[in-house]
Every structure is written in structure tokens, then in C-alpha cells.
Length: 176
Image (cartoon, rainbow, N blue to C red; front, side, top):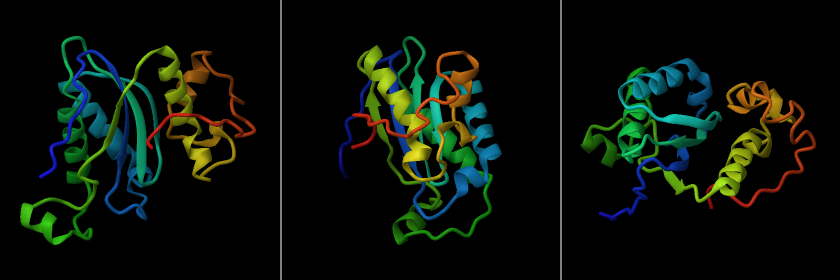
């Protein structure tokens, strides 16, 4: 088995990309209330701050800031994935490997994580998250995507409602 090396900086901010196993599905937006509940359930038991998030039909991007002295984002993702999966009806396609391990076929087993380096890096990744629905052709304007922290940023006066209105934003960040 591959030995994955994860960052382990307690109290740090991390950018994540998490995908469904079947990227043709629309489970995340189709069951957005269930996904929100999974996040709430997890945050009640293991707090963390969601600095930015965009939930697309088959994947999501997020920046979390972990509490001081805590770096266990893996536990949190495991809980979110588990709670979400348990709320869905069975019947998804599962590989032989998943069947042998008794796993659902909802999520990709792994996720992409990146340690945010500084304020400029944080800002680039927030922009990447917010522009992502436009990048994937889901909307023409960032403000039109409902499942995004962009609206919180507008409400707080951090970003204007017409931010990236021309979708000409090129960002050097996100998953590679």
C-alpha cells in the first residue's frame, strides 16, 4: 500500500479537493442538505473553521483552518464522508475491492490537501474556490452559484457581488 504523507501542522489552514468516486454523479448538489448536515455533525464533535467552500455536483473545494493544537483533518473528512454516505440509498456501483472491504462506492478514497503558506496563498485559493463553478461551466457569474461561500464574502463586504464577472480570472493554485 502506498504510504501517503500528509501535512501535519496543527492550527494551520488547508485547501482540499474531495471527489465522488463516480464523477458523472450529481450527489453533492442533489443532496446538499445532507452534505450540510454531515459538515455540521462533524464540526459539533471536532470543530474547525470553513474559511471558503464551493460544492459542485461531483466534487468540492474547501479551505479549513484547524484549531490550535489539532491537525486531524483526516478524521473530519472520514466523518463527513461517512455521515453523507449513510444518508444515501444503497445501489451505487462498487468495485470488487470496495465490496471486499465493505465500502460504499460514493467517494474517492483519497482527497487532495495542500497546506496554505501565507495570506497571499490563502487569497489565491479562496479565489480559485469561488471561480470554480464558472470554470466548470455551471454558471456564467460567480454570484449565480448557490453552494459557495462567495455569498458570505459578499455579505461581509470582502468581495463585490460582481467579482470576476467577466470570468477572466486566471489563478495559479488549486489541485494540479
